[in-house]
Amino acid sequence: MKASAVRTIRFNRTPVPGKDAVSYRLVPSCSSVPLRWSGGSLVSDIDRITLRVIRQTGDDTPVTVPPSSWGTEGISITCSYGLGNDSAPGFSYSPDDGISVNVQASGVTAYLVLSGITVYTVTIPFVSDGQPGHSMDMPGACWARMLSTENDIAGPWPAGLSISVPS
Image (tube, rainbow, N blue to C red; front, side):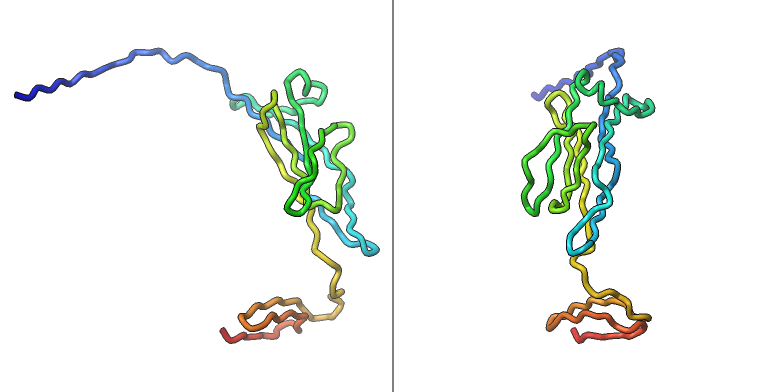
């Protein structure tokens, strides 16, 4: 003879209100740093990047945390430059100095550290159009780059020219 039993368990708990979540983020003074060629060297019109720390509690309005409060709130920021596939050694961010633009780097990454835990990361890329090339002073011309399995065809091509490459 088989016997089976079914039990219904009920928990009557009153939810205990907790504290709202607090989130932090970094807002850089620019989203990227454009580099340009001048006199055979890469230069930037931006000398320094600054960072703001934003704190938001629950659904409240986000507020900027003044640098004078960073120490008491356990906030610190470390940064590192991207150098090709590697990163340069990290350095501490100072709101008074900002981050200097290193045109040899591919960008800079800033880490917001709260009581020893990285809670936010932002990367600011340094971008350029590459080596100086054709001056594009030919009226009515446009640049085209077409790839085929046999060769690589690059312009400038006159505007309106249609090229087909056998596949």
